[in-house]
Image 1 (cartoon, rainbow, N blue to C red):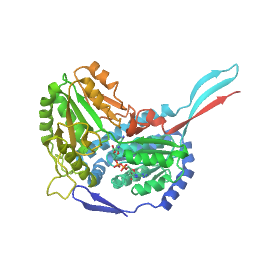
Image 2 (cartoon, rainbow, N blue to C red):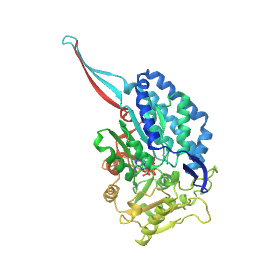
Image 3 (cartoon, rainbow, N blue to C red):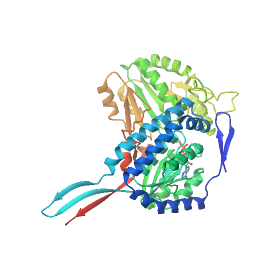
Image 4 (tube, helix red, strand yellow):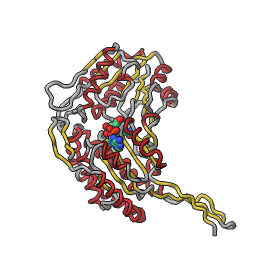
Length: 457
Ligand code: NAD
């Protein structure tokens, strides 16, 4: 059994039956035999089913938001935002899938006669192994386009977001996705290992670099599609010509939204020496205004960390930084007298790249702010990382920001904004942030394999 624990008070909400190696293999076999029929349906009927699912998410939004908050500790307003944002992503996939999946005649010579056509076929049965921090976003980035393009999906939500995984599965089935075409796999990493022992045709993973590496190694010899959306250590640079107050407020939100537990959370900030003191003052004031508390309270901005173990990761980064000369501006401790996994929003200055807080993913409410002399130093530090998810520059000049961002080794770049994902743009990481893209039309294509048709006669 899997214990679902509320991170705000450490109480067990529910116990859920986990899968076993046998039940997972059974689900795989059923998915394999159901997939061809699903793919053979006219696209319009799959679009209709996903439209119904979207309508159910919208109808049940309040109930689903409370379930999400109860198991991951996300403040309720942010849980609602995530589900609302998912509706927009589904709309994008509904609109764009017909154009992506359509056959394309690329050459025709009636005298020869010869026609060449690019066709698109689903991969087959795909494994969707997912994270807990945005279970609607990271799940639906995979299972919606996978289903629309005719794949069957074995969906393993994170063990920290199981109730949300169950709620999603129930609604997909109620909308008309056959039970064998979309199967829920319940359990922790050991069940993820079992899932991948089955001959799936693709693996779509969202999670940490450490797990992504294990998954890539486990399936390497099978020559199947492996897409990995992994962690980040996302930098932001504030130039001396930036609107400092706006930059400070925007970056504080980018660093602390969802308690810093976003793959694209701002995790390190560089500020031009000329505006450093002014920036730090605005930033710290903004952070001091964040309300920490019960995630069900509408006013709460900082809830508990989802995983108890992350409390010591964050604490160790603070201790390491302070031992190496960092200055603690606010926070720095676990919240006292709390039964939940609360850590105070924490700001460190005088940081350097010798400190873990500037190099290792924090995935919690802590940020380091470093002074830099010029754009070249900022760019060198931006790229001094094994990760490559997003980078941001705040400047009055689009040209200046463009010059820096064009050289940033990351999949997404932001001018005067941060911590932003759009369904219209590809979401992809470089280096330890992963490989492959979700979202945009590339994130639909990725669930298809091409077939080249050479047609004579
Ligand atoms: P995690 O790596 O601990 O777990 C992710 C999933 O993998 C879970 O479902 C887990 O049960 C499963 N798993 C664990 N070990 C496994 C194994 N050996 N084989 C198969 N499956 C296994 O990550 P997490 O804590 O759930 O998520 C946080 C991480 O995800 C952070 O690093 C964050 O940056 C990253 N993330 C990235 C993106 C992105 O789009 N790039 C989005 C969200 C989260």
